[in-house]
Amino acid sequence: MFNLTTRNPYYSFDTFLDTFLDERSNRGNTKSTSLSMSPRAQINETDKGYSIAVEMPGLSRSDIEVSTENDYLTVTGTREVNGTKSTYSRSWGLGENVTQEGISARYDAGILYVEVPVQKTKKRVISVE
Image 1 (cartoon, one colour):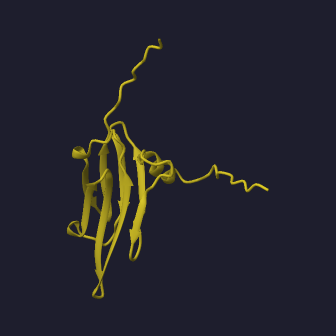
Image 2 (cartoon, one colour):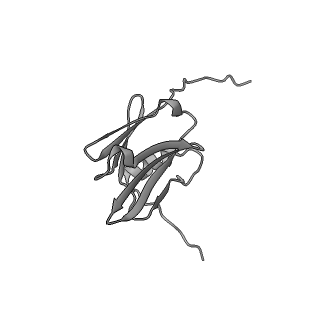
Image 3 (cartoon, one colour):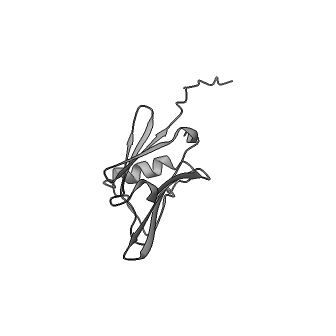
């Protein structure tokens, strides 16, 4: 007897882009950790790369950190409520074509906007011998 698993054709576009951004794994390997919550994010492809909008309401710029390490982009927010400090973060794998030095971020009205530039690769035709 076999167990068959069917793929849901209606999975979210965010899941698709999370998987696409992480070229090192067939499973998408995005990681998300939280003590209180994981921030929601929307990823859009632009002509220069990717634009990520992360919901981080109630934080100031000093409460937010955007970093890259080991080919991962990580967004971290720290909040203190009633004397309890909580930290939440979200990470995405970066592909080989991402220009990490060109990543920029700005925070406006509770939304963190991160621009991730991508180097365009040119098509190369390889002769068959």
